[in-house]
Amino acid sequence: GMNAIVVRPDNPAIAYAGADSNGIFKTTDCGATWALVNTGVNAAALSSGRPWSMAIDPVTPDVMYVVEGYGASGLWKSTNAGVDWQQVLTSNITSAFYSGGQITGLSVDPADHTHLVIESHGNCASGKPCGAESTDSGATWTLVDLTAVGDWAESSTIAIVDRKTWLYCGLFSGLFRTADEGASWQTVDVMGALPSCNYYEPFVWQAADRRYYVPAIAYAGPGLLQSAPGDT
Image (tube, rainbow, N blue to C red; front, side, top):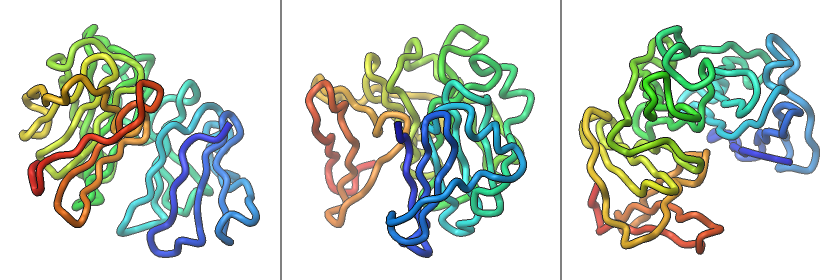
């Protein structure tokens, strides 16, 4: 089946869709026709698993990132609009993450396109969940301790609100917030809802009324979590 879909910010007629074990497909005519785009370097790796999470650099849209769930480990990056790909996780992260670098989701800072945060798909070598942060478009990475959120579980992911403020959404653990780039986490009261940050595609958005919105797990009763106006 189809997994993540992303649209180029500079040309909404161009979109990319990730197909389970079949690669990344591109349309240039608003979805009327599609063609396989990962035809260059590491093409097989990009067709090896489920593209749970995809992102396009909002400033340099020829730069793309893809996570291949249950496929080739690591974070895959293209600098030529999806044709060629390279794995950009460093050894300090692949050795710490579950199964050599299996990733749940990728979040790109809405205010800084060089700032990326990822989460391991499964408890890390430490026996607890962990993530990683890059402030240079994936060239270098530092480990983020997620012990405070409990054991890792499906449907969890990290979504960036701003440089220091992130949300961790876990199906069984709830909603957590950090205001210091993952150094510490606090529980957010969501009155029993099951936050998802949109499953493996991390997503938090702010409306015109300055309220932030986070999706709730669809199969547990779909809905939205809403913050107070301007409250991060």
